[in-house]
Length: 213
Ligand SMILES: C[S@@+](CC[C@H](N)C(=O)[O-])C[C@H]1O[C@@H](n2cnc3c(N)ncnc32)[C@H](O)[C@@H]1O
Image 1 (cartoon, protein in one colour):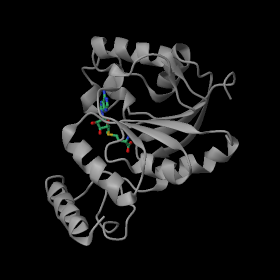
Image 2: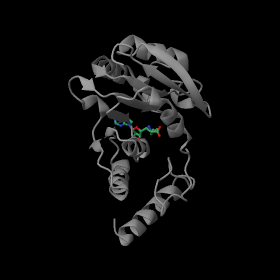
Image 3: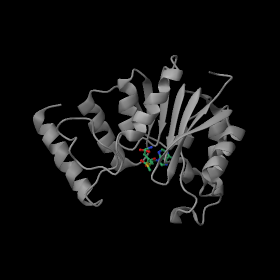
């Protein structure tokens, strides 16, 4: 990317941050932009990466709700072939510009996750800070069940919400983190869960499928 383009990107990101208490969502892995404050650090990816050695045969990944692609970029750096799912136009614009800045090749699926068709085969799946949105209404809950039934993966990293959060008080379902993992196991090919960490009030789990491992 040319310097002028990087400067324009930096200006647009800083404008975006001003509207969000001075912070972007996740850090940007580029010297010209790495100083911009972010709500989350790289620690969640570092935790996930510390578990990847257990799965030497991982080739493909699905990052659900990729936002600006922080995890998609990091997984691509580790050699995975990534599909990043995001359906918010405002985020997609930054996602494409950052993908170009990084020189990444990951695929962007720029529609609702639930419009992905057929059996979904990805070795690794990231469901970080996203699945609680899929239990807020009965309609989306059933779409989520359909998605889980069609998913074929070896490992999923799942970051759960906290059931006390205000946004979940009127939700159709509001699972506690461990119950949410049990729900994922009941409705998908996954059959084992391990709690691997916690970031503020949101725990992180690694779910695996013994059959597909
Ligand atoms: C809270 S952010 C989480 C970002 C990232 N997973 C993380 O933890 O750093 C959730 C993202 O998922 C996207 N999203 C929500 N529902 C979606 C859907 N049905 N299909 C695709 N993207 C969706 C939102 O636009 C947003 O960018």
